[in-house]
Amino acid sequence: MKKHEDFLTDASRLAPAGGKEALGERIRSAREMRGLTLEDISSRTGIDVATLKGIESSEITPPLGQLIRLGKALDMKMGYFISPGVDKPMTVVRKDQGKAVARYGKKKSQQYGYSYESLAPEKADRMMEPFIVTLLPTDAEEFSSHDGQEFIFVLEGEMKVQVGDKVEFLKPGDAVYYDSTQPHLVKSATKTQARILAVLYTGAK
Image (cartoon, rainbow, N blue to C red):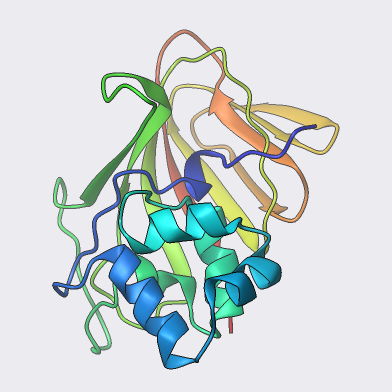
């Protein structure tokens, strides 16, 4: 199975919340603060230098799978790159106030099977990344693998989940928890959209 970034591990068009510094600038600052070169980071993450240059210049928004690897390479939590947040014990996201994110292809009108909203962009030092995800009908099947674990609870519609060779079809009220290190795939199982609550734990310190 070819490794790709799935809906939870792709942060296309993800703009940072809380703070003026762009995502690429945060990554570059963290790298330079540690005295590391792009070649150093490439060897630690497996991300090629050209892609890293694009990330740091904000020409490329890295998928969350790459952010997980960058966080480990830079000894920082992946969530900091998404949004540093605020140092307080609790943050609240009201209905319809989540941070909307959509994955786009080469043409902005082309979506790759999902859109989602972050449910905790303002919480600092968070150990989990929760999202409400809308899975759109698509024929694409892209497998992903990365550090950490994922939990999914189906809210509406029907979804397909495959971890390794095991395939399950889930309906509203069903849930799944799996190790993200295993090649996995999540998508709508029908010609209509599905909505899920998804929580990503990166395994970071």
